[in-house]
Length: 296
Image (cartoon, rainbow, N blue to C red; front, side, top):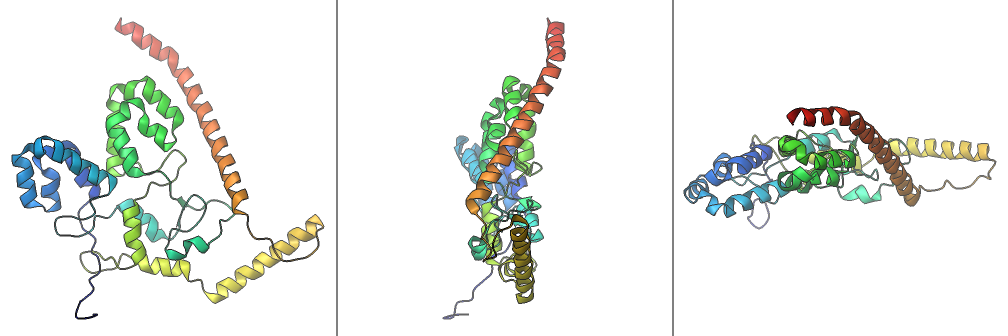
C-alpha cells in the first residue's frame, strides 16, 4: 500500500481465448463471444444489431485473433495456454538461444550447443490465423509459417477445395497447431509480458509461477556459476592444446557466427523438405489425373 492505494495483482481469466475466438468467428453476429466472456449487455446489443451489421463482429474477431483484446467482461486477463505451459517449463528460448524469461535475457549469449527443447517462433500466431481465415485457399498461412511445399500444394488445390483451409484455420484458432514450419512454437506475446511480471494469479489467488521462473533463470546460484566457469576453462584449455595454440583467455562466443550457422541449418532444412514435398506431389500426380478423368 502506497499513499492509500492498494496494488492489485492481475488475475488470469478461466475463459479460453481460443473458445472466444472460435465463437467470434462462427457466431460473432449473434454476440456469442461477448456472452461467453461475460459482456452480457454488449452481447445483447450485438445480437440485436446483428454484430453491427457485421462490422462489429469483424472488429471483435480481429481483436481476439491478434491478442489486442486482453481481458474478459470482468477485467481478468485472457491467457494463451500453450504459451503458459512453455513458459512454466523454464526452457522457452528465442531462435538465437536467449531465454524468454525477463529483463536479463539480453545478457545471455547464444549457445553454440544443441537447440533447446522449446524454441519460440518469430512468426505471429495472430497473423497466421488471419491469413488462414481469409487467404487460406491460396496457402498464404503455410507460406507465412515457412511450410513452402505445403503452401504450393494448398495453392494448387485451392485449399483442398476449401476443406484443408477450414481445417488449418480451426487448428490455428484452437491452438492445436502450435508450431511453424521449422518446428518453433507460436507464442502469445501478451501472455509472455504478463508472466514476466511475476504477479499474475489465477482466479483462486494462486501465482502462475511466471515470476519464480524468471528469478530462477536470471539469478544463477554462485556455486553453479563457479562450476560452469571451471568447465568452460577446462574445455578451452583442451581445445587449445589439441589445436596447438598458445594458452590465453577463453574466446567469447560469436553471435554472428551462430546466426550464420542457424541460417545455414534452416536453409538445408527447407531444401530437404521441399524435395520431399515435390517427390510426394509427383507420386500423387497419376492418381489425381485418374480421379479427374473418372469425373469426366
